[in-house]
Image 1 (cartoon, rainbow, N blue to C red):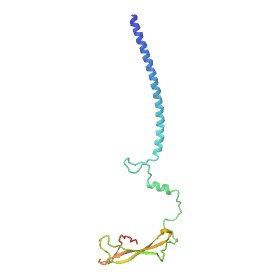
Image 2 (image 1 turned 45 degrees about the vertical axis):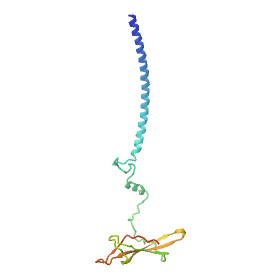
Image 3 (image 1 turned 180 degrees about the vertical axis):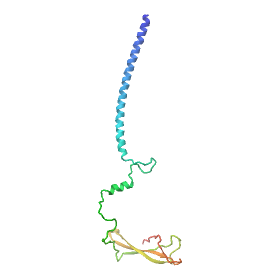
Length: 180
């Protein structure tokens, strides 16, 4: 019987050693779990802060496939943001005010160069306009300063009055500007 007891005693010591090793392993794993839980808790806090910051830039109603970035403010919001604090109510209606004399830039009476801007052909029908009557429509002036010398160029803009129509009408055409 003593041989049986000695065998049981040896197995018991082996079992005791195995239990101690397992206990040490469990303790080590519990420490790792606690460390991982602390890291997860820190990252959860960080994610919550970042989510809160990101929510300020996101707009409701933007689809994930939209070409407009979710952080882009609407044009209406942008206009309000840019003009709200800059404009103060004056009590006047918008537009030209009564009693204010309007003004415009005056044309120079002696331009350095005059350009006649007349169309060559009708853009609607494609016919040549060489024999059509020219009527001066309006005059503009362009001021350029090449090499620090002011050159004033006067441009005469014409419309064509068609002779072959039943009624007399003036047709404005797309005009190619002739440069000299």
